[in-house]
Amino acid sequence: MNNPLQPKAGFKGVWPDALTPVKADYSLDLHRLESHIRTLLYKGASGVVLFGECGEGPSFSHEEKTQALAHLIKEGIPSSAIMLACVNSSAPEVAKLIHLADYLKLRAVLISTPFYYQDLSTDGLVNYFDFLFEHTQKSPTHCYLHLLPNKVHHELPEAVLNTVLEKHHERIFGIINQTGSSSLNQDLLKSFAEKVLIYACLETDVRALKCSGIISAMANIIPKVVQQQLHGSEEVQAIQIPGLKVKSSDERLVEFQSVLAQHPSIAAYKYLLSQVYKNHDWKLARPPLSALDSSSVTALDKTFAAFGLHANFE
Amino acid sequence: MDFSNTWFIIDRNKQHEVISHEDLLKLDAHAYTLLQNFKTHQDAMSEMSQLVRQNIAVANEKIDHLKKTH
Image (cartoon, rainbow over all chains, first blue to last red; front, side):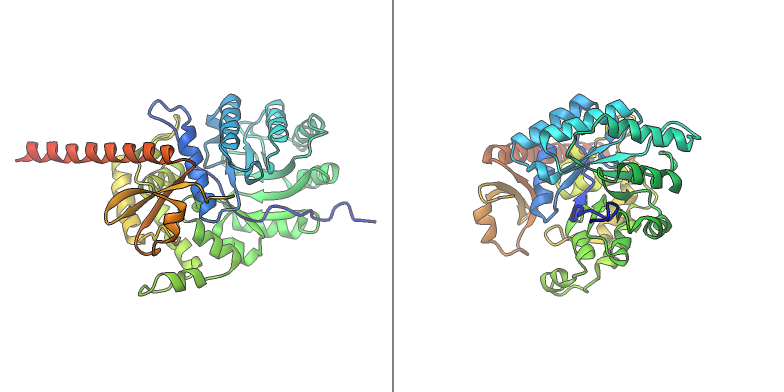
């Protein structure tokens, strides 16, 4: 008899936490989103996460998410290459997104911990997930618990994770740690590795943790470096950039982290993508976020120029 | 995903170009910078016109700035 709490087969490869483009009037730019995803897939990404932390998920309505997904699939992006992040504190709204993912046959949904509320009890958190899974009982879509930074989202205590995994193990394929905490990876592995897959989202952690897949913000800009990091191969850069000092993917990722340091992350990623695609419209973020201010742009330009991106190889 | 009938915008010799996947494969990877992929030639051309318009706007801003400072 199979152990019901054994880890299931989860997603593999690099899945960029895709940035979401908006037009000058801050409406969702569907054509630019499609092109960004196509480009990432061409560069070797296994798929993308939409409307997640980098994708400004809470800033877009259910209708906009539905419209975006329908457009992408109609234009030929495989539904199996899309995971939908459900960043919301309303269980019925998350349930609606899971039903949408079922209907469109998406690869998976990422269910974040609730935000806004402080001091949630163990019972309250467990009931939240009970409600969610009971209202999506027949859903075949793979679900991942998505841990986001504690300053914004409620932390899921080990007791809650244990209870939720015990009660809903058939639905949960893994835990994705996007809190930015390396030490939490170790704690999760220690407590849950035998029950469920643990995914780290810090690019510099994936090799040590031997993850089979990663959801990566940096992969919006340097997808191939993140792939090299995940697969532990450095040959691509060594062969394809003759005359340059060969740097490991670890070194490049650390360099890239220093490029981004001190700037608001989503605005900084969008600015860098505008430089990669040579299109100024990518700088825009939907309010309440905003584009980088001019002093940040000057500083970021300087460090990004020194980073020396090789867009075809990185 | 099959990219065989798709189109790309690349930078080559400091100019933007729209190129088919088939032609892209014939290029030396060091001779160009890949910008983006598009499903159709029309989509790629539409983006290309926008890039050109943006470049013209940036050049005009620089000219105006020079006029004011001289």
